[in-house]
Length: 309
Image (tube, rainbow, N blue to C red; front, top):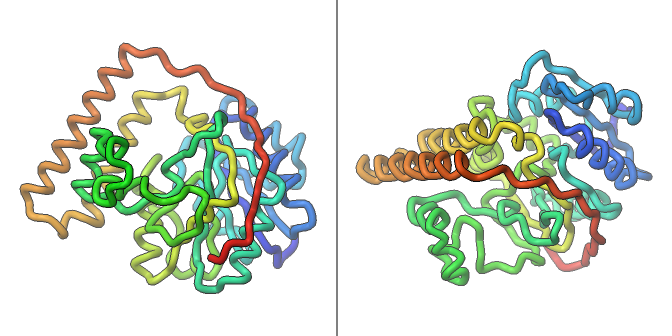
């Protein structure tokens, strides 16, 4: 690994061996010709993930945790050791098309005002993972999301604010937040703002990070003409009820940390009540619904255009 590499890639993994194998194979191809370093932080997997990486990807540095410490702590362990001019947070259940990383690094080089980049993230069936470009939640946008009013009125900017449903998914524009499955950040920005908030075990840490980055004056851009494939949920599929708890806990944390002072007490209590009710409803539904069957990842073509940032 070079002491002054162009890109550090950090992958936190927990029991995702086959997804991780495919992810690292795609990264190996996507980083050809680039000076890179790759870290895999294994959260005490029991499926042989760490041993597989050490055997099949000797260029990757494996950091083993003695327990499942969650997404934030695992990533922060590698972020503290990263030396790249840019750092990529990448989920283990993603596939990176060959031209994606070079295209995004070129954008960083050409546009010094862009601090953080995300790209279009698609599911294996080609549908958009709408978390890849978001606004910060408000009581109205959260209500619209939970009730699916943003799908009924996708062009309404108030109701569709959280998932930005009115904007072209193939465009390039500044957003308030991107998703932790793929976040490319300048090293100097990371040094200034620090890593992920370890109060979040799983979910919400990406939204929280983007909040702190924007509060520090940094811009976050969505690049829709470059994409990665994301299976989504590979690390959490084995513990659905526990992950459901962390998902809703992260909503409480984010609101309490960043939004509670923006609203009167009765609005805050309505928010907390809504989160609790949504958690209870999902808990009941999950108890009577079998878990979805995993689908294989499918690598799709990448078309990086030359539209201005």
